[in-house]
Image (cartoon, rainbow, N blue to C red; front, side, top):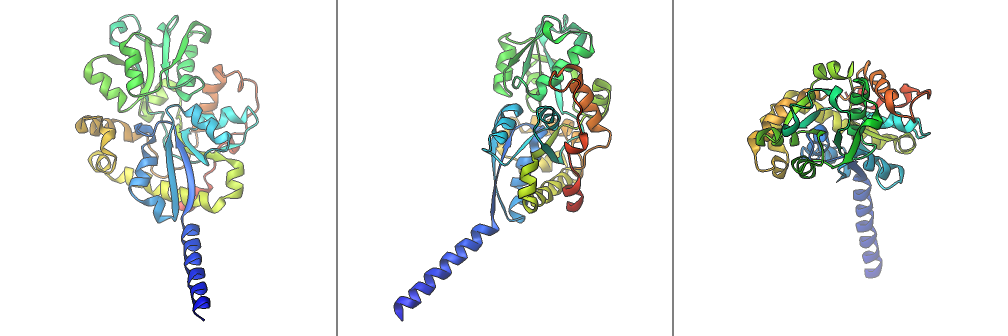
Length: 332
C-alpha cells in the first residue's frame, strides 16, 4: 500500500508539473534592437507582466538589425519578430507569407543624422550623391528608407554606399570616426548625439506628420510579425500575444513619459534618465493606441519599396496578406 501511495503521490506531482508547464506557453520573440524606443512595447509588455497574465512564458532576444531577426524567424529559430512592417512586403515578393499581427507604430520613429562636420555640405537628401550611409544592416529597414530618400531626391542608389554600423554605441563610433557621412538611427541614440553635438538632424521621421512630409504618407513601421504558418498552428497563442501587446499600447497612450520610463530597465537610460524621458516625449507619438494597421499605411510602404527594391519592383503584392487586424480587434 505504501508503494502504491508513493506512486499515486508521484503521479500527482508530475501531473501538477505538466499542468503548470502547459499553462505557461513558451514563445521566443526576436527584437531588432530591444533597447530602441521604436521597439519599446516589446520590453514594456514584459515589464508590466502582461505576457504572464496571458499565461505566456515569452523570451525576448535582441538582434541589432531587423533583417537578421527576420532571417532567424525564417530559419525557425524564433517564433516571431518585433521589427518593421516593410519586411512583410519584401518577403512576400520572395514567396514568403509573413504577417504583421500587432502594428506598434504609424511612423518609422527614425531620424537621419548628418555628421556636424559635414552639415554645411549635406543639407538635404539631394546631397547624398557620393556619400556613405550608416544603417543598422544591409537589407534592413533603415537601408530601405535611406535608399528611398536618395532615389526620391534624384540620387540613384549606385551613387551611394550603405555601411552596416548597427545602432547605439557602434553607430555613434562610426560617425565620430568619419566612417559615415549621414545615417539613420533611433532614440535614444539620436538624443545622445545631439547632446554631444556630434550630429545634427537632417530628416525627422518620428511623428506621423513629419513622416507624411518626408515619405508622402502614413508609414506603419514597428510591429510584431510572424509566419502565416505559425498563425495557422498557434492561433490561440497569437491571440494571447496580441492581448498583451495591445494592453501595452493602451498603457503608453494613457501614461506619461516619466511613468513609462520608470517601468523600463535602468540601463536603457544610458546613464542619463532625463535624456531618456525627453526622448520618450519626442517618440511616443509614433505609437498606435490599439495595434491596428493604419488604413492608408500599407500602400505608402509598397510605394516606397517599389521605388528601389528590385525584388518588389514589378511584382504583384497582395497587401491584405501582409497584415491582419483580426487579433487586435478581438483584444479590444
